Length: 613
Image (tube, rainbow, N blue to C red; front, side):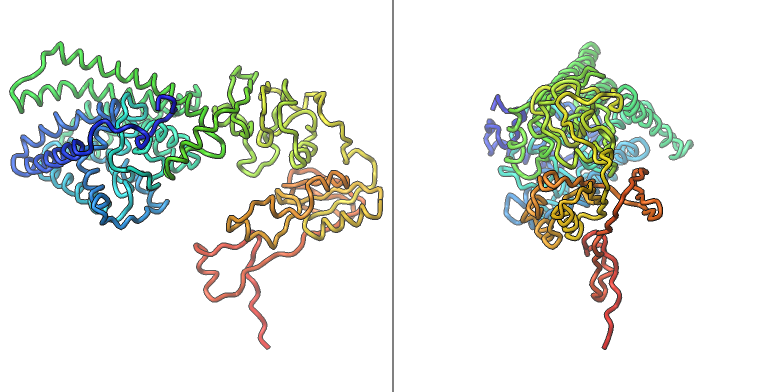
């Protein structure tokens, strides 16, 4: 287990017997019910016990040994009881509700803090009702949904805080509930807290990752505001909320300023901000804990001891930050472009993602001086983006050819360009001068320069010395469309041994393929490679230049020119329009009004109603 970069809870050897955990869970549930009773019966005592003793213990346990609370939390116990007794309905929370749940948990936590001063600090009945409702909701969620998706990993207000503070725990405790992973959550914290934190922030879905970043950015300011803002009924709730929300907004601004101007990456910012929040919390909170001990038990710690503890918490925070830096490096090395360790689909997903780190290529970006390791099979674009090196990734937005990179050394250590990349480089006038970062995959060490202007570079020594068809001087045939009509036209031209230059233009990203077989791709039985009807080298052998991802926007028949979506104009001697036909929706009753559940191939239009005889 020491060799595992991210040992998960299910892989850890159990140390504490299960019976001990169940005894501890029963005790914490009993204590929670007793506190709820105190909040209703003797609210003065219950409020002191909650705010000044019990709740202040949680953040430190989250940072040091988060698995302890995850195993004995009374809400988690009630959430898991239906599963333990085999009466859970085991429904799966939909992806939409998974995302909604994240916002519910964050809003609930922030609301809980905002309304402590005006309401919760003084009303034992309201606070007791909130705790009782949370226990009931956790139990219902466990009965309806599988695993921890009914509460702990979704709606629980403490879940965002636990992930924030527990991202690089100093100690791990085996998860005592999920002996086997059910895949109930995305980036499941109970499966692997260290990897889950990085997977959350690195998630490809912005609506999933951005709210995590925002909560972490918001947290230090929220804690500062809570301890330094008082509520006065005569001032009104609006004035109080304005004072409470100003420091968090400043905190958010500093967070994104550091990222956007100083380029501090989100992993490190998240670690620094969460541990800053932890230090602020205990700097203000430890004197209150000491006061609570005096009220409840009649004794308190010496002032010097309290001060020592106040300084020791930042020291623990620094340890966590140091550990998170190590974890970040390990995560970057283990992350593959095709597998982001999303943790919600079982143990084997993470193990597979972390086991593919053997073959690495070294890439030196000369302009910034950064050296990065690129896993085998990863594109240069993915590697640069993963390491937050700025590059124009226009292909993400449909702007093919916006990411040319000058390769200073090691051109031979890149995969050779395929026909698509060559055609794009030709259109840009960069063939032999640059490579497209989204296409090339390093196999060994290379040096690149993102600041170099590829148009000012001469052709690389090992670039192919091919004549550009636009400069050949031969008569030119342009075929618009690469379906069966377009390819057949090109075939007949070559069979007649004509001396034409043939350019085939298509707005699709693929060579000629079997349109009728697209259902095989939709149903996952094959990939696009299985649909190609002619060999890839046919175009090169027959001297047919293919321009993919290219839109013809206009034809000037008088001047014998076509206009492209890039703004270029291309002359022709012969023009063949082989754009084939357009498909349409069948005129089934009600079909056009149920578009949320009806899917068609691109380009479909409503059909005209059938003629009646």
